[in-house]
Image (cartoon, rainbow, N blue to C red; front, side, top):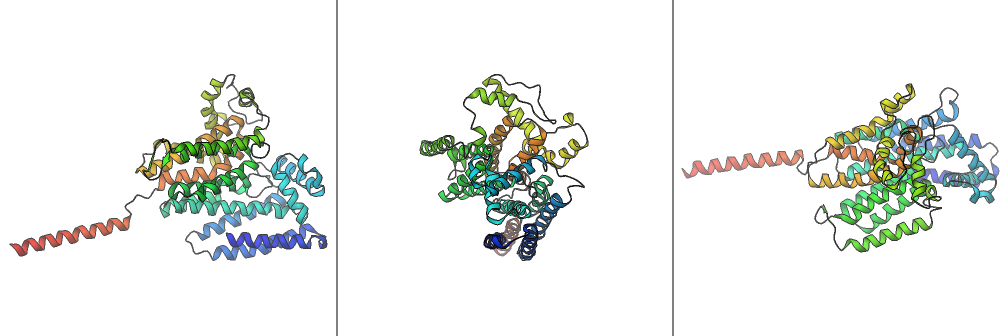
Amino acid sequence: MKNIWICFCLEVLLLILLKPLINDFQLVSFVAVFVHLFFSINALLGVKNRFRMIFLGAYLARVCFLFWDLYARHIFVFPNSGADSEMFYRASLAVAENIAILNEVRGFYPKVMGLFFHLVGPQRLLAQYINVLLGLSVVFLFFRMLRLLRIRPRVTGKVLLISAFFPSSLIMSSIFLREMLPTFFIAASFYFFLKWFRFGRSVNFTFCIVSLGAASMFHSGAAGIFIGYAFVFLFYKREENTYRFSAKTIPVFLFIFAIWLFAFQHKGIFLAKFQNVEDIETVIETASSSRGGSVYLSSLTVNTPLQLVAYSPIRAFYFLTSPLPFNWRGVMDIITFIIDSSLYLLTLFYLVKHKPRSRRQRNTIIAICMAVFFVSIIFGIGVENAGTAMRHRQKLISLFLVLLAVLKGWRTKVTLSQKRLFTRRVRKSQFTNAYETNVSS
């Protein structure tokens, strides 16, 4: 994946240099994407991994979705492609034409894309192709997480297929929306979090926090994951393989508090969604709002802080699983439930049903659940309809798929080869004892 990104960056650098000479930006985009497509296919075919065809399929599927969104939308328009994507595109073009309005544009994504268009020209195909590469990078990161956790290969292959071809991921990886940038940074943050969980090291902790901070710049709800991380950072004792409070956690707590204080003081960058949140009443008002045709829990009113605490888990559950069957309005809701909501509902079902096989598996599940729980609470308070929920929970796909893999494919300490070796040793010991008995008699 590194070589694919290096090749793309070299192409972008060349386009920046050639921009004054370009007259037809659409044609140049086609050439650049197809050149990189040829290189990427060869690079993926050269990957020495049993899952390389899954990676190749994930890449080609996203490229096909990209071209469909741009040139076949008159036949069928992807969910979430349309109003928001066109709004982001127009805002990006405005920034590209006039850098002076950069600070006036709302949202970090159109600013980034506006600067990109300013450098290479209005090449929408190339801009959306970045989302394709980000989506593929998420699949690679997910594979590295499963390998880090030593998930069984058979389960790794199945869950990796879901990651590669999950419909929401394919769509979000191909349209002009910000979703893939926070999705990628959340996946990167979670990867370094798991590395810290297994091996420690301050460098993993640093990359985990920095990646999550980058995700929060594109969508503030990602900051909710930090609360779950903080729980693990404070209470997990790797030497004892358990969760326990001790006085040593106080400096860590002060450090975490300093990070939160910095984020709050600069909430225009990291917590833009919370920029107007000054007190608990604003949060309650947000939790009580109802907008959109696919709204859920419209009868659930939140008027007090106690109700906010009590109803937050319910809103988090609906955020992850809507549209539920009793809220279906038609065929599209049924399809959304089958291809999207059912994954999160199935993972929650396995979580309730599952009994940990070892202490390490239990601790790993607790660590993932802390991150999932708090970020779902944050998103659950701010989201009130199924369409928006579908788009936002896509950012958490790596957490849920890793949790599903840990629940279904945890490799115990004694592997099959170790069992066979143990059996041979037992048989050899039995034979030796029988022979010595016969000799002595």
